[in-house]
Length: 401
Ligand code: SF4
Picture 1 (cartoon, protein in one colour):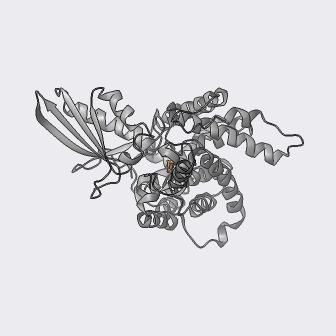
Picture 2 (cartoon, helix red, strand yellow; picture 1 turned 30 degrees about the vertical axis):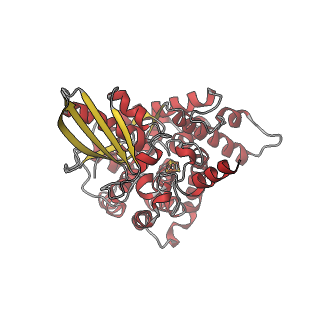
Picture 3 (cartoon, protein in one colour; picture 1 turned 90 degrees about the horizontal axis):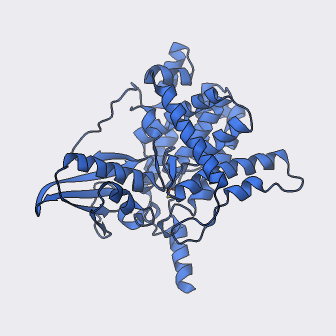
């Protein structure tokens, strides 16, 4: 299994697989063919269906300003649901081509090549890792730092700074999000809207939701966020952990450790299943973010490893089957609200895991496998194509008006 560092990537929203991945693919291709004078890019599958709303063309043109980009919505025989074909020409002659897949969280895979990133973990399942921790009599976070070696803490600090900046920027911003859906920003209103006689529980939920909205709205505005594990699900972890640091007083050092544990959970999910909405639906994005946040929070609270595992398992279990159906192909409805619901759900998962971990029947690894199988079974209309669910309902409603 690769480093957890690549679970957290700093980049521009609104979609890691539709903006960060294609941007990285264009950069890779330009490096391969620096002498080319013309580039043609064809986007297939989910990238063709929701690429416009997700600003895929804009991301590619940041690297290849004059690229001719086309959206092929008819080809169905694809090796990956997020496939891109890059062609380079010089003097009117083709000098090279590559099929590149955007595999989720901003990562790419070049057809016919094995992943470049080095595997640094000897294990790929949480059960194996927990077994190793018990053998060595160390905690999960100790195991992560031991495996990742020097530099992880500094990297997480950089990631946490970018996450905090996104919360703070988003809390100040107002207005309408881009894309034509006329969705207004709500983070600032939520943050300031204390109700008469508001209980402490309601305040907690409102403030966490405000922080999460702040980041997700920054993402929808194509501003800088951190994949956690994707851009679409980038609000859950920063929103929840920001609350823990600034409203609950947990020291930053411990927040970084919680990020490490959350990162390990995301790493296991992407290794054994998927974190791509185009591949497995929203359960792979928001389900993963919720699971990561629950594990990180459980670790922050100092719960035992079994309870950390159980919190992560509950969080994924109750996101199983969650479809991806973004209205107008924009990462706004249901995505922004869904991030805040997932952050609040993570808190509940930890509260259940505190008391019931001994009675459980399903392991984290089993639920991850189930998520993957469910995702493979899912109809393509519910995998980031905007052909089903809320996207279809909204389109139908618009036609009637
Ligand atoms: S519905 Fe979920 S998976 Fe789909 S774009 Fe929104 S956050 Fe991403």
